[in-house]
Image 1 (tube, rainbow, N blue to C red):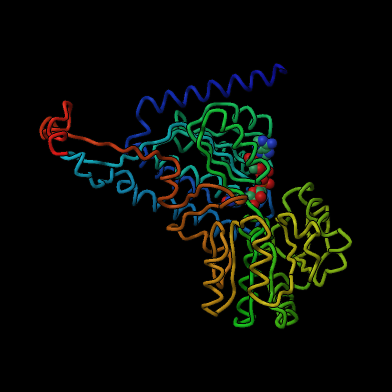
Image 2 (cartoon, rainbow, N blue to C red):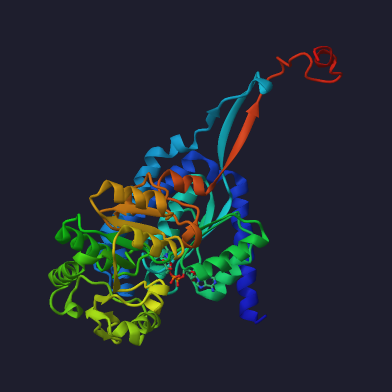
Length: 464
Ligand code: NAD
């Protein structure tokens, strides 16, 4: 092992020991500490709105308005909810005691899992770093946050701000890429919360398995959207364009990845989508201040590779322009590509929208069922039977009907994937639960042992 690496590993080992020591002291379990930290986190978000939004702009070219509404407001709401509900979440819940265990009481006592590792991605680099921390703090855990190296400005600002606002004996930020994450993953954690792609998700899970550490894996995949002839096309096109290009330019885990469209509305929908793109971003989207850019040259090449497959290129009906220097790829629609081209096999995570013509719901459902279970499923139809078919026949992390992406704002929903799109969930009370263990505590006094329950079983034998 190189000396530098050895030092890094030694540093990480010491860090985990320090945090274990803090948890052992009991401080993080107190309601007072949790409340203080949640208030401090809210303050961090509110007081640094401008610099956080600027940092995200620097890393992704994401319009400030998008950062404020989708990242910072969501975080402020999430903190406020945790502050309001913390006492209730922490309160043990009484459950019934069966006759055999009477007299006695039974309580479900939530307890912090301990020291958590949170690994965050680059696409919503503030939201997806801090939101899991709200859960960890609410639950009374200590935590290490590892922001993404792909969004270095945000990583660095979080590394500066978090120690200023939060208790550094319990909450730490470690910056870096694969080597430091590998060193972190080698440690014994009480919980690992990972957001990112399924390939690394497998690495995280394998590392966690060595220590039997529970994991939450917030992963991605291809999110399908079915649309039929019952809907208002203009309204639908606006909602689809916002969920695709207005939400980090398609670089979001819940962006609609591809559309399955009932055949006779395809020409009209394509025209309406094109018109909406122009309405949102102008005739030349490369000059629009309202469109996020591709995060890095590597991701630019990954996305253009999907587009440059000859069987995809010939199907471009809108967009396709790109500029590597400014990391710009135009909002692009490809119509009826074969289902076995890369753009239909891989998660796109960028501004390309494939449209596939289908006869109706039956065909759409079959296409979706042939692919791994998605993180988000979208249905645009006012027909209740069609809506219910998608609800009951397709397993997905979550779904929205006649809307895109906004379901992630509903704190009552457990946000998370299923199958290939992830395991475990968070948001609202689910975040508290994700970082908690539910301990059953059965309590009884010294009285009330029923005669005949201990040997010799004379009474029972005599009653046979
Ligand atoms: P990324 O490249 O930032 O990676 C995520 C994290 O994994 C980073 O902190 C990175 O340092 C770490 N990492 C990368 N390679 C690693 C390795 N070999 N070993 C250990 N750690 C490693 O982000 P990404 O993966 O490109 O993010 C995009 C993916 O994340 C998409 O698949 C998307 O759908 C998914 N995603 C899911 C959600 C969700 O909430 N479910 C949210 C955002 C993104």
